[in-house]
Length: 500
Ligand SMILES: *Cc1c(COP(=O)(O)O)cnc(C)c1O
Image 1 (cartoon, rainbow, N blue to C red):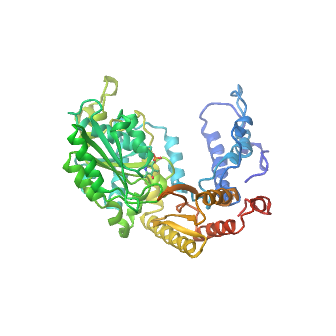
Image 2: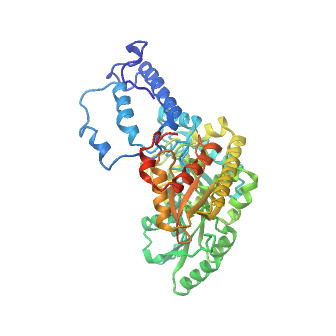
């Protein structure tokens, strides 16, 4: 990271003066290089940062002016403040020691794709507003469909299709509204939504936004491995139909957040079909693992019964946030539910039905050109490397889990599911929570927690762009050392704390 915010040797022309037209090609060229260099330096310096920000609430805001400047400032001044004020208040998601939540990894090609998207500055809301944006999106999402081995019913140009949304949460919400409309016979409050007790919070949030009252949201219990129990699902649906309610939307999760459990999608889909409910498969995290043929059966099994299936290349497929790929079996069902075409959005192409106007398939009207970054990752990194990364991450997670299992103070709470494992101290929830706090305070790693089998679990999710085998095994070193030395003071003040 640069130390100084002064102009670099080489003359002031490297730091153009502020002001001037909002887009001056020469100035942009110059400032763009500085920013790209800054990003490259940031990534090179990542291992030297503390992963988890160590600031108090309000600390960063307190260092920022309360009002915007009247006069233009030079890039150097802004970058200087970025380094001095903002970066120390960041949790570094691209740090090789980031093992919390799920990864949100970025890569060189995806960052460049994002930059190109901003540079082009187009809106792809309608086919007409940028035909190539819509058509590239259709193509790259179908490339990914084929790489994942998703069924033909989602293919480009068929009854269904695929698209990119901002998030799995938005994708689920749109499908839920389509499901609600499809069961049009339902009176207000009569439709019911089903998801496992371990399903992602976005299922309940989506149901709330779509107007389902809390009493119409069923959380179905899971088995000992965290998977939705189809027998309980069917029993709940039977009770609801007997009471005159209409089963509307069933969420099957492929890779739960707590422990990576994979619901029995085929069994769930069979039940959903039997009762006329929409099946949505939430494979936000685990879905992209299906690029490896050996995980395909696990991940896409039952997809041919799904009305919609979504995954997040922005989690561990090296595409920076945001990039959720959603496939639907019936473009008519989704477009029919969401499309509202006032005169100002009507076009000859859209009216002809020959093209997709993707804004009809999502919440917002405006659309970013997200296909570019997915295109760049698939072309410049390539499927073989993406597969190898999945295989490595799964193997390293298994190695990590084997080390945990060997330590008598620890126990595995859920065995590795792809690149996610959960574990705890045998000493109990309080000791586990306290250990996690101390581990994260070292600054060298960041792990998060979940509830697994009623216990407080530490989660290790592997998937960072820079994370290597040494980082994963090193994380166990940090955890084991913290468990062996419960004196937090020595950890915090020891030399080199927070460094790797
Ligand atoms: C991450 C995740 C989500 C939410 O993803 P967003 O794209 O941030 O909305 C939903 N479901 C599962 C299973 C997830 O892992």
